[in-house]
Length: 118
Image 1 (spheres, rainbow, N blue to C red):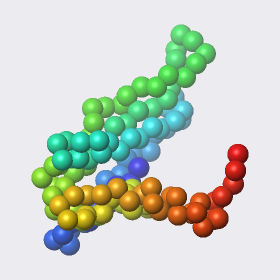
Image 2 (image 1 turned 180 degrees about the horizontal axis):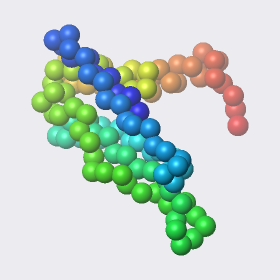
Image 3 (image 1 turned 45 degrees about the vertical axis):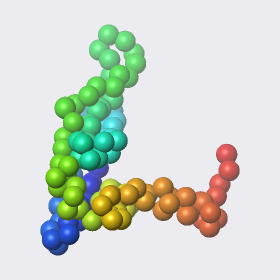
């Protein structure tokens, strides 16, 4: 996951998760950007991996670490945009960072671009 932060000062920050290895028995990476309490906790990333269970023939989910802070609540006050994996996720409107990714995603379907029905 690549999180790009754009600051009012003109500063720019990039947070990149590291690649996980199949050779280390990691079958899938699960990175979660937590923005549920952006004013209280800031933006955090929670990383998990899917690994084979040693005792059974199943895959289990394993948390890799504690949440990693990408931007503190204090830093959030000075950020005007957040981009995640090339998609604008948040933009500043007044005193708040507002989620905008949904509108970008849905616009494709409304225009007929990705309108496949299942």
